[in-house]
View 1 (tube, rainbow, N blue to C red):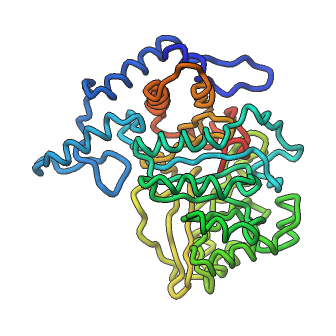
View 2 (view 1 turned 90 degrees about the vertical axis):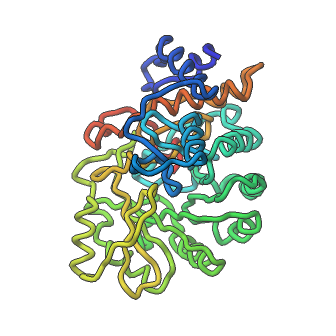
View 3 (view 1 turned 90 degrees about the horizontal axis):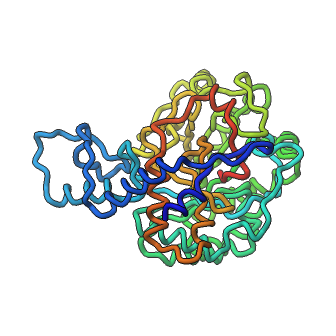
Length: 408
């Protein structure tokens, strides 16, 4: 198992650098801690933690004067000993799986203009490996899975994958993040397979600008796909990355989209990834967005948020839909993060902005590996998750994958 950890954990390397391996001592320490936790014999000091909140995936503080039931103690011990719990009491119940690195768009914030080198097919996870990993994570407590890319709808077996995931009775939600181009063709079949939720990436409500951002045509098809989703009973989330001087003049147009459509429009602060030429001056902050909206809609009001929500929810009173703000750069939400990611080539990323990955694909394909070995590998990676990301200025200097090779 030590060999497996040693050969599957690495930092992302620049094209001209060597792979950086996890130090041997850290591998052994992580594995030892993981085995203690999994066996239930390990003891950790969590003086600031008590009974976990049932509504949250973070092990929260509670009043120590309150009596603790046996059921609560058992639940707390189970969370602490889970491979999906990190050192800061965060339990990870949400998994994003990238199904492909391919995409039929070339969005500027996601992919370099000249594209990215794609991984050879045999190095990508097979459908059977995706389902096997998904079921393992669900057995450990994941309750929500989102399929991403690349663009997941370019996978011919997407509907079959959704159906196989939904066959697991412990899994509560299966969603996809898509650019929406193929929804009018595929959404009915996906709904029949059990698809629960839908995120659509759309950065402009103007056809000409859409072509400029994505370097492709198709804006009308995306709008038609969103409308079809609403007709089928979904409340689609529309994700919009705002960039100063590019589409920030459409903020109020997106608010108006929620007037007659039951959609959740979410503005995302522009984030730095390799190849997207991120600059501080291009980013529109959450507070700036809020000021722009309230100048036109003074009654714009906040809505309640769940304990692990990444989006700060708002609405214009009387409008059918709502708005949200994903503030990764100016007001991070690392403390309540319950998300893990698996890339299309099978690497586990415990943080979107982290540049250390663990190859679950290599583990799966290693002769003689066991389910317990794989759980230990996952646990060791999760235990190394940092308290928060490095901050937007530091992130812009760090090597990371382009967003298309991570998965949205």
